Length: 426
Image (cartoon, rainbow, N blue to C red; front, top):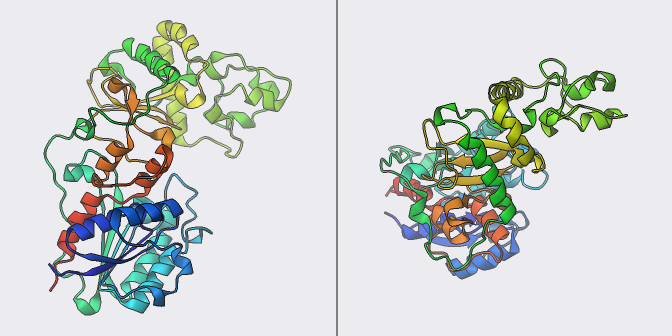
């Protein structure tokens, strides 16, 4: 394999750097907006990391063979505002990549982003990106996840590879299959004696215990396949037609709201406050089909299990809204025990999944995976293993900064597998 020069844009913790340098290629320029990550990059990789790429003239960037860029995904992510290329902060970074490519004419461009990139703005964003790249490059893309390479993390990302048409394009290239057949287990990355970790707070453990009581009352084949919205237990407010928050006060007070409590109030706002939080919005005339289905399914579940649910509801009624929702993502006929599964506290509810692989690392510390059998959260070192960054010497100074960086990082194992097949031309 040739020894090529690459630049690492939006470098973060240097996932591209690790992957390509392991294959013998040399980084000649790096750029990262975050000041602390720039210092960490220098410590870990031994190369100065520049600041905002938009403030750097393309003439100042050294000649190179490969542009690597996990350009900011927030403008395209389903979890964000999805402003895309119009995003005031991050939307113009793709144009900067093209400005660099048009000036330096590197042989390869290697990009990573969220899968929603292709569907954003009804495909218009992808049309623009692919047309710009295709002027001088042949491109290919594929959504891939580390778990298909034996890494216990499910993290789908789109990888885009390009080679200049004048160099022969992508003739002979195909993405690695990623067809790992072995059994995955989160236990393979867990540190038995971590130096630092965050324990589960007593109130968090209490919430898990209450939901375990819920599971103790049903059989594995009876566990709902829909998200449990406990606030619907006992409710009978209308939801099939006009959204309930748009009904008049004197109409709403005829019904029961969250947890079957009689709707009351002397004003419209007071009556709306009696509804579950997800039913209080006034921006939609009618609920979408999926929300109607969840409400209907939860009310039916309550009707069938009213006898024991009425005794259980008082234990959950004071939980914060997101903790009154529960998702069992462990499949069929699995023993209904939380303590040996992976738990995530998400805005959509408490999610429980099998301990075969971790959910994708995200930018917020409120969603760090929990290992209940250890009574603690995942550590930053364990997160590093999930991104194939075991060799990091230096990490961000706080837990929240570290998980944010890992949530933004490219996965080294996936990038390296792709690069091994891409960068083989003589």
